[in-house]
Structures are given as structure tokens and as C-alpha cells.
Image 1 (cartoon, rainbow, N blue to C red):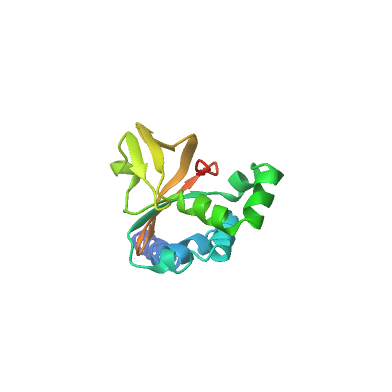
Image 2 (cartoon, rainbow, N blue to C red):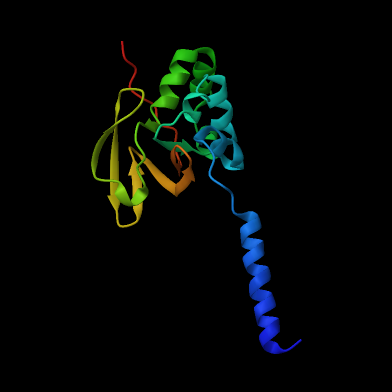
Length: 160
């Protein structure tokens, strides 16, 4: 094989390999379920009965706490969420905006969540923050929105 053909064959193989690993966007519920680092969140979304919501047309933006973010929560908080489905649902919907917001579109200020509260969004260069959480992976595409993984679980204020 000539060097030119070898280069072309290598480029073709690289292109085909890239196509094989590219995932087609799916609804948010499936996007969360596909990502191993979001397995805790995906399970809680299902437990809270929010899977159908995250399959609806949206659009939504999900600030998705990673498994490590959930591990950092005190056990008492995890037990409380497990025992109180309404509080679990409130916490999860506090992580969702009722609009598609790419990282490049984030503006400093508050954004209204599906839960009804406000999240403080911030941006410094390419770094995006949500309350005290930092976006780790931005702009994971879904058919009905976008996911940004974050390093903390956000807890909405308890309403009385």
C-alpha cells in the first residue's frame, strides 16, 4: 500500500470509528440514564415519577448532580429525601429550567426553575456556576433540552 493510500485508509477508519461512538440525542430522561456518572440522579428521577416529564417536548435545561455530588450529601439529607417523595420531587425540579440554555447563553442573574424557585447563575469566561455548584460538563445534547453536569446537589429553600 502506498503511503498516500495508507493515510487515506487510516483517515477513513478514524472517521468510521468516530461515527460508531457518536450517540444520537434522545430525551433528557434517557440522556441521564446513559451517563454512568449520573446513575444516582437517573434513579431518583424515576423514583420521583419525573421520567415522563423529562421525555416531554420541553425544552428543559437540567443541572445534573453527579454521583459524587450525591455522595457528598449528609446521610441525614439522603434519608429525608428517601422518606419524603414531595421533597425529593422539589429538589429534583429545582435543578431544571423550563427552557434550553446552552453554557454560552448563561447570563449572570437568577433563573426560574420548574420547582418555582430561583437559581443564581454565574459565568466567568468559560466557567459556569449555578448557586454554589460548578458546571463540570456543559451542553450534553438531548432532543428536548440540554444537560450540564454539576459538582453539588442544590437544595431549594424549604417552604412552609
